[in-house]
Image (cartoon, rainbow, N blue to C red; front, side, top):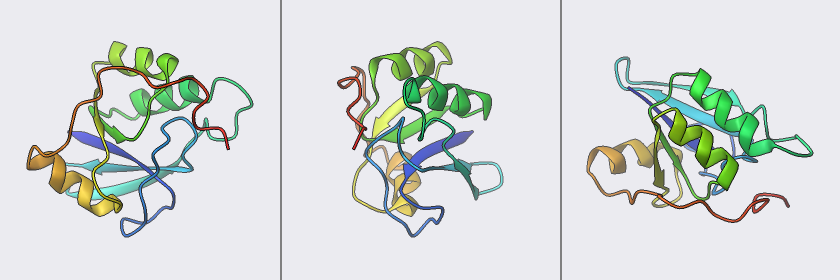
Length: 120
């Protein structure tokens, strides 16, 4: 199983990012190998449709679980159509999120946040 965490940097000791569609990186943890891969978010710099592009990238990477802060309605629709479960970040560090998930401490996100919430 692969778990995707929205991240501000490409390092497991870095901070999580509460934005899904506009975060700079995704930390993708592979439960089979116990290793992380960091990929730049293809949607981060899109003028429009960042969430859609980001969600499709996550689906294409074979992710089954997303851990983030906020997911817009379009991104949520793509993730749900890919049967991807979505959970809210707990704490600040990327490396903590998989442990929190495995311990059942994360809260499921079942409703989308506002559109364009990640634009700064």
